[in-house]
Image 1 (cartoon, rainbow, N blue to C red):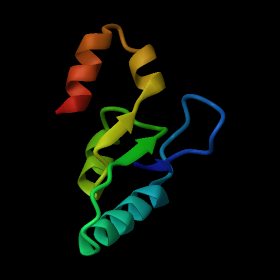
Image 2: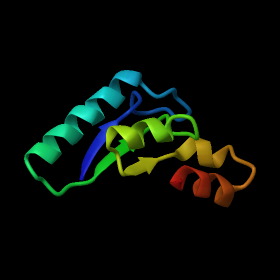
Image 3: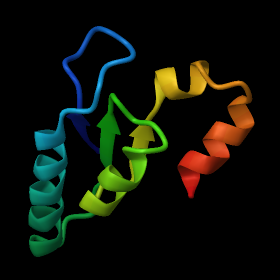
Length: 83
């Protein structure tokens, strides 16, 4: 697994750093080109708006702490993030 921190580590509730989406895309291109079997994990700033961006870039594991903890219903937000 390759972890891409999509925020500055250490504080919850931060906004996703957009240039990290580009890094995920480049990493995915490299992984595909070299035929490497590895997961890409995006950690930080993941919510219903940003999840599709990082998924499209190539991340297949998402860490969404604040988005889940601040939701009224954990199951609902998790189900939505999985789509």
